[in-house]
Amino acid sequence: MKRSTKNTSQYVVCFLCTLLLISCLAPPKEKNEDLAPSLFAKISETELLNITLQTDFELLFKNKSIEGKHFQSASIIVEQKDSLIYKGKVKIRPRGVTRRDMCTFPPIMLKTKKKEEKQQNLGPTHNIKLVTNCEDSLAYDKWVVKEQLIYKMLNTLSKESFSTQRVEVTYEDSEHTMSMITKMGFIIEPLEELSKRCDCEILDENAAVKNIHKEHYKLITFFQFMIGNTDWNLSRRHNIQLLNCFPEYGPTPVPYDFDFSGFVNASYAKPHAMLPIEKVTDRMLQWRGDIDEDFSNTVAIFNENKSALTSIIEQESELTNEEKENSLLYLESFYDIISSEESIKTEIIKARAK
Image (cartoon, rainbow, N blue to C red; front, side, top):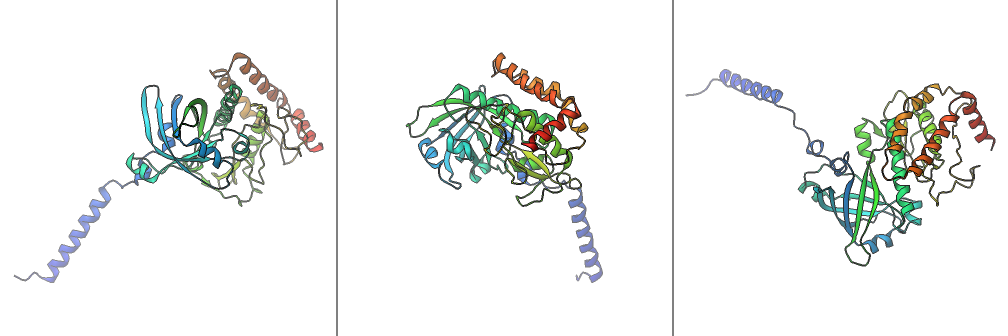
């Protein structure tokens, strides 16, 4: 029996409406990369982690003087106490500028392989920075610890800052030419994950800084002054990353790399030759704006968080009481300076006069 054209049209319309209704009621499919954690997300936000990193370290040290991104294969095991958190293959290479050249044991960049991400149900893992001990010395271990404390202090003051994770790394040479050693270090949140966490856009190196987020710029300038760090430059993007978090206020500057700060006070750290200070513990307020700028809101932020900043130092188990006391005294000297508008202005004028 032949079906009428009218009935056929009604049937098609009814069928399409049913499909549309099903698609509307069904939960949206999320991308696997949105559901699966990256390697950094998987192993961060926990207590001290134990990492075993196995690779050809002679090759790694050889490549530290070579420009470019020469990754090599490595195996990694991440544990917390007796619990295995991650085990797999990664790619690593030397990273950094100054520390890569001067350190026997350079900082390391690592990332997971695409095949490994799929097998272990990981989301895309961007480059993870591993801050190493640089040299086999207790002093270097302390400097690594103190540098991570700086990241923690910045986290207290601003969400738009790199998170870190303390790790104890056992370096195991796959070619057995280097003795196995275990040293303190920390890993740094990848820039892409920071921007996603803070709902920001990564700006390239050519982004204008004329209309910088002024209040955040004040915060960062005072923070660098607090830790005694002059190893940064906004216009040249030296140890500064720009994010677009609040378009109406302009780019947000996010600092990193604090080993040349007075707070760390590493023996290898020296001020730039063009700067009018003799040692890194000498503070210099690198404010480039108006001398009569109102810093009351900035000072209020530091005052409101003083106890939290102090607590970060006091609770650090890797520092001796004497080391804690010295760090607290250095912090207190900053608070003495920002206690009055006159002393702040004096520091700005002093820096410009020199």
